[in-house]
Structure formats: C-alpha cells, structure tokens
Image (cartoon, rainbow, N blue to C red; front, side, top):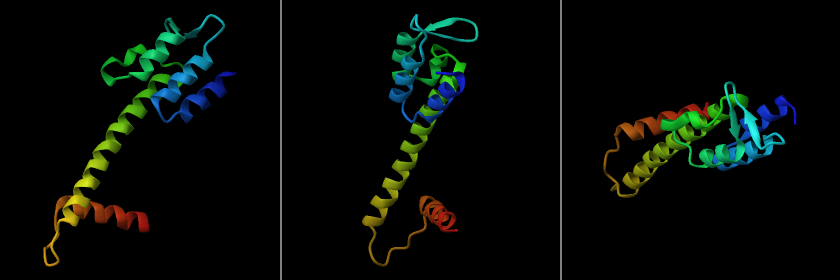
Length: 120
C-alpha cells in the first residue's frame, strides 16, 4: 500500500475500531509504523487507539494523519452525544406539553433554527 492509499484509508475511518484495524493493516513487515521521530509498534498503537483519549494523544503517531483522525473521531463522538442529549430533552419537553402551553426555550429556538437552515 502506498502512502496516499494509507492516508485515504485513515481519513475514511469513522470509529476508533476501524482506525485500529487500518493501523494494523498499514504496518511494515516488522509490525511497525515509522513515526516522525520514532518507530511505533502497530499492535500497541492499535490497542491504544481503541481506548484513545485526548489526554494521552501522543500514544498515536501523527504519520498518515492517524492521531488527527483519532482526535476527530473522539471529538465528533462527544459532540454528537451532547446534541443527541439536547434533542432528547426537547422531545421529552414537547411530549409532556399541554395543548395551551407556550413553548419558548433556548433549545427549541435553536432546533427551529437548525430546521430552517436544513430546509434552505
């Protein structure tokens, strides 16, 4: 696999497990991936990837955009969990609303704004 193909595979990963599999797939014949300053064991790096945390980001090499993709996946996952929680709160609020209740909360206004943007 050439460098461009590796970058492409890394960038297509949507989960840390997918990224860990790509890390193992990209290893050289010695089971290593050469980073910018040192050689990384692909097996260890794949293990670290599956439990990746932003606090210990240097367990993954920057080579091929591996660390950047892991950070993106973790950030996006945290962001989506927050957005899902907001949506669930709105749904819960709306389902408990009485017919004559006024709905004017910050979350509802934001939701309306997102809906208007998506309809444009």
